[in-house]
Image 1: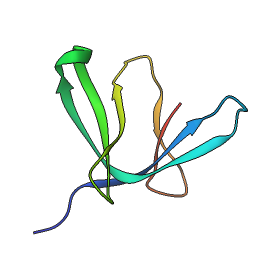
Image 2: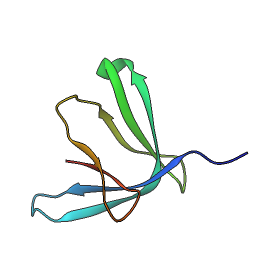
Image 3: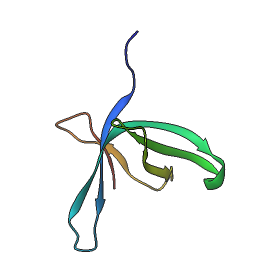
Length: 74
């Protein structure tokens, strides 16, 4: 069986406008009741902890970086 999970890196922009590395994980989409909508979830590949939970917004630009298979949230 092939592994179809999407491996991603999660970064956050800190108050000094520098990127902080939050870790590497696998992204999935699911309906999150608390957010009342479809959301992107990233679980750490090291221990399965939640790195990111973000409601999918139709006004957010999601794009794949040109040189790799990375997904950028802008």
